[in-house]
Length: 107
Ligand code: FES
Image (cartoon, rainbow, N blue to C red; front, top):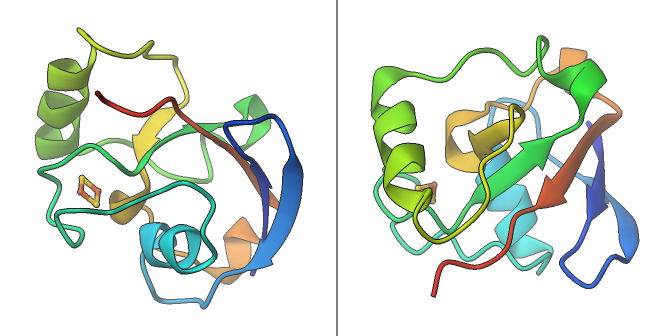
């Protein structure tokens, strides 16, 4: 699926993300700024992205585990309605054209 990415410096890119795999892996492998330090186990918060408004429904809902991780990030970075952990989004055909913005790093 093609994923449109706004990187932290504001530059825009379109990457190809393999279907059936976590979005985090494609964002990490394409060097968009996502680190994925925990390897996709929902415990580092370095894969935080903002999903664009129109896509939030299609990207699915947050799990309780994801919600807890995002709440822990709130002290450091802005949370938005589209805040998601990219390791919790599985790329599918339905997400072709998805727009995400890489959230600021957690320092
Ligand atoms: Fe660590 Fe998603 S990769 S929380």
